[in-house]
Amino acid sequence: MLNKTINIIKKYPVRSLLVVLIVVFAIYVISDGAAGR
Image 1: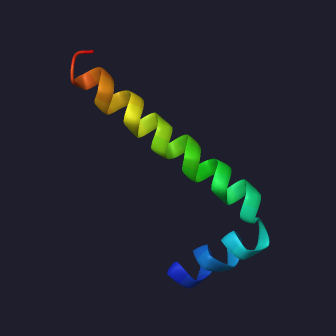
Image 2: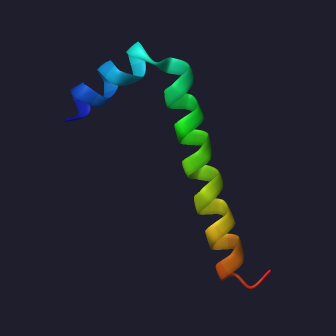
């Protein structure tokens, strides 16, 4: 499973980075909203 993920990241480094950034941003916004800000 992890090996497959690494292969995808090697194939599409830019797209993988964008997906990671979007996921991190979404988690940050959700946790920030949950904090009541």
